[in-house]
Length: 318
Image 1 (cartoon, rainbow, N blue to C red):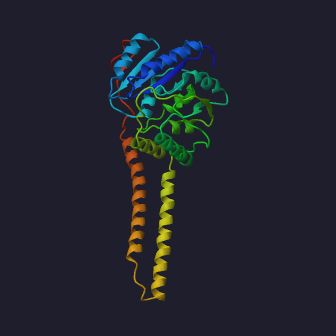
Image 2 (cartoon, rainbow, N blue to C red):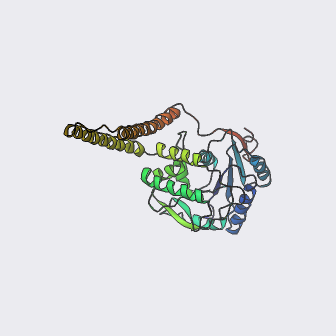
Image 3 (cartoon, rainbow, N blue to C red):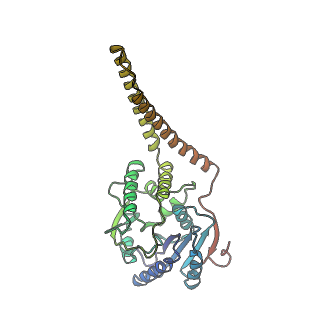
């Protein structure tokens, strides 16, 4: 990375009023240690229910490197990242969380990995400090990403990562209402690598990702960037129909060979419930695609910016 390269640090903020100042201080400290003077810190308040935006305002007043936007409602982490990408001006963009678990001393590893053979680099935690629930959910997410959107096997996706400017420019062309950053990376470039990084304990509180939020994120990614769920639904339909045909043939033949054989009410109900369940599942998948297509056709926004700070008087408080 050249000495004249501009860095943009992009941080979505939600329920982090007690940690965001420490994260910004870590960035400033590491930038000084690496002799990086040309950088900016972009903070995106995703309509957090706490007073994090008041804290952000104070940070912007004290630090000329920081600029911030506040979204009008909670659009989700990936939409907040898209909002930050569109206002970031760096040649290299570094993404991290607001909870203080990222060890910024590993920043140089990320930056050094971005060369001719790497466009996007993800940190890979040497030892994860997440809860057991988060580890299980993340593992499931990785498996589904490999099966449905083509994530390379063995690629670890963490919340501390960096990309080149041209990748960011391609990503912000996406205007759909359901952005999914990993899917956008994977469809932009295949030059993605991992570097080992440290992971710290949370400074305060716990993860904002519940199972419902993770499920919503999966649906966003897999319905927006893959048709494989529809293909799986088709295969399940064929399989269920084949099982039903074989079972029906068995019942008819058994009845012919043994007229006194009682009809199996329990087995018939089980078969009906199984087939009905498969039909409802497939209809649900199709419905997700149709519903999201309808929302995108109606130009639902990825996000709405309510307020800007640190852009100069002509842009602030818009």
